[in-house]
Image (tube, rainbow, N blue to C red; front, side):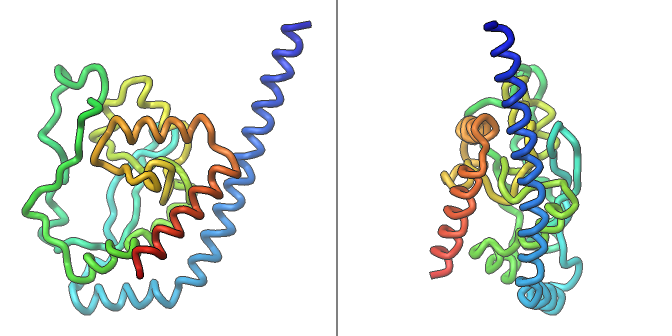
Length: 222
């Protein structure tokens, strides 16, 4: 009887988690379409401003790691000068002999000091507007509105089994680690928060993250 109850419990769990991801995808589609429509005037204004002040390209495309270690192209508004776009923002090149047990908790993504941001880019970053084109990634199914931050392939290649668990869900435009103020400054904490999300993702947690992210965005504009 105990085994039967256990089997039913597991069956109910998978049913509810699959239902959750189904409705999450439907909500992603609905909200991304609505946001793209509402933000269309701002989107066009940013495109015009970048093209006029900094020239082409308007968008910045970079490879990221998605769900189940799949690779996709993430789209953002270009914030750097054209010369800076070709500079790889990576830590001192890791070697398998030093990272054989996974990405160290103390790892911090450093940015090349020669990278220069445009005036428009600084304005976009200040208000988080550079991420607007990522709504297209959400529509395509590469990303979700809520999830772990999209990882760089060069870093994900060194994930251990524990760290790979953060790739069980789609990356998000915002997420639990982001609202906690953790991005690339502390890899260990980022992994901890992301794994907490993957193990506890729910409608309630997603709503809490979206509310907090919206609150932080509005606060930055005041």
